[in-house]
Amino acid sequence: MNTRRMGKTGLSVSELCLGAMTFGRESTEDISNEMLNRFVEAGGNFIDTADAYSAGVSEEILGRWLKSKQRHELVIATKVRWGTREGANNAGLSRKHILDAVEGSLRRLGTDYLDLYQVHMWDPYTPIEETLRTLDGLLRDGKVRYLGVSNFSGWQLQKAIDISKQMGWEQFTCLQPLYNLLDRELEWELMPICLNEGLGIIPWSPLRGGWLSGKYQRGMSAAPEGTRVEEAERRGWTEGWSVYGNEHTWGVIDALEAVGKEAGKSVAQVALNWLLQRPGVTAPIIGARTMAQFEDNMGATGWSLSTDQMERLNKASAKTLPYPYNYLSTL
Image 1: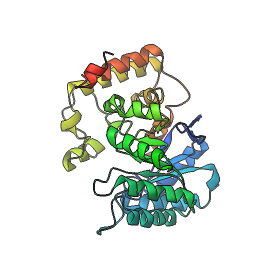
Image 2: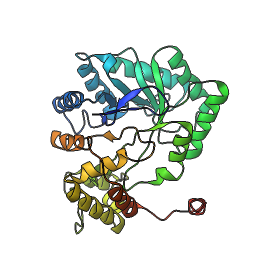
Image 3: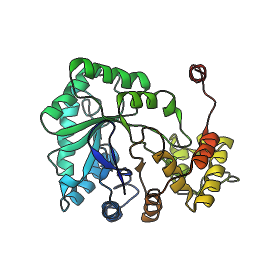
Image 4: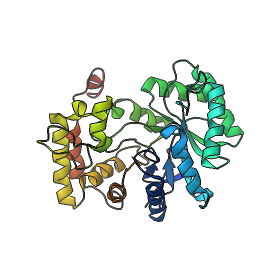
């Protein structure tokens, strides 16, 4: 597996990132360890988790696996925002919560530093200056080496960057957003910010909960029982059938299947490879529930879609731009 630089930094990460959200939830510890071992064997070094995943269990599983590995060869990323338990100060981006949370993550992961510490989402109740000053202190203390952010809007991301510049604090080096062939809104504002400011893009849900995995095809009327999409519909999550079971989705899947047949690749591999060739993308985050899904995802590297195939996928997945992006696109 090839490596890429994280944005404008000198940090090298594998072009796929292994997401650990399923660890301790859909994936047992044995399966999680098997994925981790296979990922490293294939040349992967970038692993992403969060303290909120299974209330810290994901970090614990990763930490136990790390004990027998060469820690310095891996890039370990986690996140702060939601916390692992209930309580007035056990969530958010206050100085108190961040300082408590980083100690908890370090303990569960069994390491004395984090390669990448990411803000999981905006906190409307905490001044962003308080958050950024606290994060900068973690770098000065050696507990964190790089900072990242996830699930920010354009104005929130730019404001955080500008304040950090003005105050001489460490800036965010990457953005972890929702980005895939069905969700391209990132390109309207967040991608230009990342390209202009030098942030790497590490997309989450690159297969949108399985919609782009190859198991969904035109003519289906509901998600198969036991799938992520079926669960999402029951729980009201954003990747549910009522959100994506439409003509636009079927058009994207039709294009993926056609390109996959030409390239001799699976639908999931084509969808991931499309992301790998998009501007500013450093490493899509793959998150599998089974080894079969994991092995299929790993086949997304080592080859490239042609210019014609990329253009066909771009056209099939394009959406009508809302104001002001439709006006700006004419310039």
